[in-house]
Amino acid sequence: MLKFESFIFNPFAENTYVVYDDDTKDCVIIDPGCSTPGEENELFGFIDSQRLKPLMVISTHGHIDHILGNAAVKRRYGIKVAAHPDVRNDYESVRQQAMLFGLNTGAACELPDVDLQDGENIKVGNSTLEVICTPGHARGSISLYAEMEGWVFTGDALFCRSIGRTDLAGGDYAQLRESIKGRLFRLPDDTEVFSGHGESTTVFDEQRYNMYL
Image (tube, rainbow, N blue to C red; front, side, top):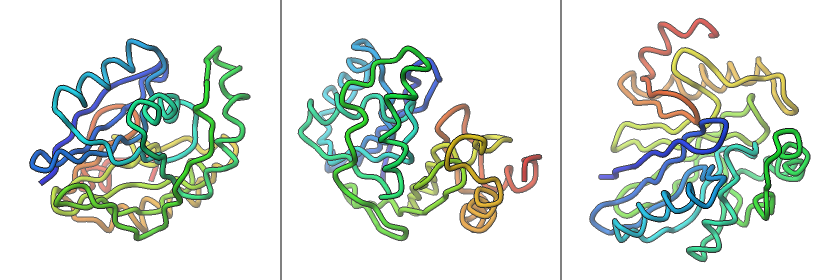
């Protein structure tokens, strides 16, 4: 079974997740948003103290707040960044996004090294994360479903009582609604939802109480 540790990073209060198998020590880092040396040290300190073995960085989408730490993690552990191929336009506009908020991207906007496809299974120790394409907030948005554990990491697609904004480039409300209702809401009701911002929720609660759907 998998475990995970979450961190809140950068001015956007973005949730970064380290998902790991406590037996094999394999781990993946989902959306490293660390934007300062102190935040990088917090992330690295956890990984190193637990003697984890990073396999890859996984980007749920290409917005700046979710990829600020990509370069630092790649450099530290010699691993690759994986994402859906449709994130490329957002990665290429990251420097423009950063200028609006006074952030330094460094090499964060380098294109991902590995393409992920819908339905692909990413092995982490003795468990897997299934890639579920959930576009609508951004091009190439994906969620990651840990069936054995009953978790789904939704990036900025679905939040507790809210959904990702669709007024940015690549956003589409109808597409996002279909991603959530047609893909995420088909998961078991008791599936725990861990989003890119804010607190966790469940599929059951969002089906019944999310006013945006």
